[in-house]
Image (cartoon, rainbow, N blue to C red; front, side, top):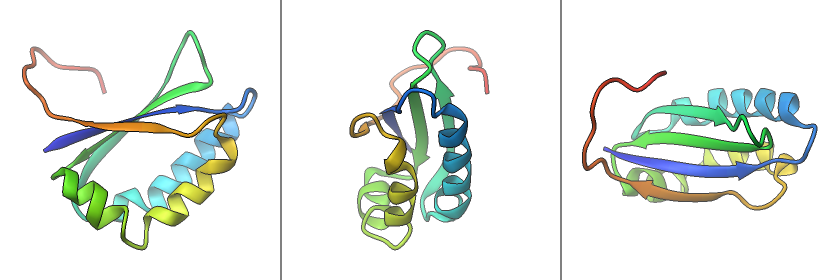
Length: 104
């Protein structure tokens, strides 16, 4: 399993609308995505327009090929794009060590 981490910067004053749109987009796309195991959306305390979106995938290919080249990705991106202050950045990570239980 791999973890995709996306950094999203939204327009000021759009938090509630962005979070509602993200929730709807997640119900429409990611929960149906083949190879997607779970996700987490976190808002930065010091900079509330900054979010981290973490998505667990079976593999990089599940994200980059099966999902991104499939029918679900375009609608997800289009629903959120109006809120972006700049393009979202994402990378894939694999776990190399861990300790304890991280909060939900």
